[in-house]
Length: 169
Image 1 (cartoon, one colour):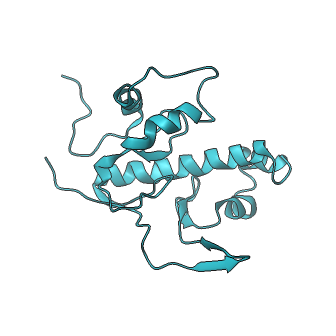
Image 2 (tube, helix red, strand yellow):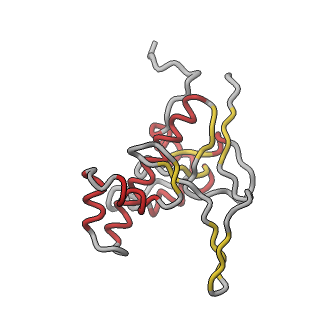
């Protein structure tokens, strides 16, 4: 098997910490833009000002600020941009994966899987929990018990690494 240099965005990196009213927030996580494939920490702002002419961004920005519909549309664009980036990282075997939720401990790239519905990257341990509440999943769908069944469903959403042939024999 080919050796890979996949890294996962680290939670413990030095970062900008902003404290207000006793609440600490870190703003160091970058998301990749679906249209220009560059990382940004304020994705909604970037999409609104730079890509407002794109059809999907215009639809998202047509909803009032703070509404559930707007948040869901922008989250979908953010997940899809991260998915494109993660797919290229997995294909080349080099780079940093962008998960939806950073793990508290250092993790390997093989510990993660993409959701089949929203294309968000989650650890295998919590993927089943996310699938139960994924907003883009089919209405009324409840997966059968067992995290392996969820993982097999999501296995088809995974990008194919470069060392695996795409041809069927």
